[in-house]
Image (cartoon, rainbow, N blue to C red; front, side, top):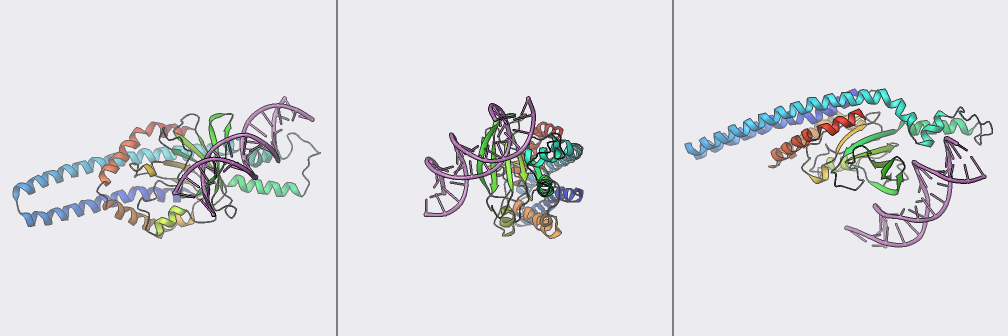
Length: 315
DNA sequence: CGGTTTTGACCTGCGC
DNA sequence: GCGCAGGTCAAAACCG
């Protein structure tokens, strides 16, 4: 599983635009300020503006430092998580309750050893291969939501149709079953259930791989998606990703996703797409007068949520 | 009116 | 074989 390059580029995607934005906004504000000062040429007013500018710069610097610290912490947590995942991936898969894809796989050579099994010699390899395929495409995503939010909705950019809900024995919270809206042409399913330990965390389990583009990617490509897809999951199930949500202030994008998957998405991996996303993020954010406020909110939110995040990385 | 959600019934695999 | 638990189906309700 070679996903480190993708993960690191994805992380850069989150980190670099901030630096780009910071430089761009500083230069922009400075040039606007200079022009304005020349035109008005009122010393008192310019003095006040300089003072304001210094204050904003100091605030900007402070935010940048906080962001740097945050990114370092995020990196450390991500490394912890990937270490943990690689150590426990085998254990996790064999220990799951899921029967079709795992238990039968592990017992196929006969813990029960019943020679009168209904499976024929032709069926066995075929079934095994199919189950292994399914097993290989299972991925999990942990999504933080508002504690008051009782819906089992994970905004991952795809459209889902709920086909069932069940209360399971090991968790009092109901588990919801979703199929991709493109079914039956797209076979992907997902299960969403609240974590037993932290009920503000949704655990989404994806099975299969989408054979069509992510709807949010399509919207972004069309330029109609003003809320950049940082917080959404660009999920072809099976790719490793980490996403940093800078748009926490928006209710529609409050989800904070840390996902473990197993192989990269070609579209997201291409330099053109990354460049496009960076440019789009930069342009949309620099035009937004609420950007500073939203950034501050995101950072404070991150800091407040740091402990639960550490908790996830242990689980 | 068509698509989605809800929810009880049903199916299937596993352990005893 | 039986009971349990997870997963799926499908009819009714809901919604835009």
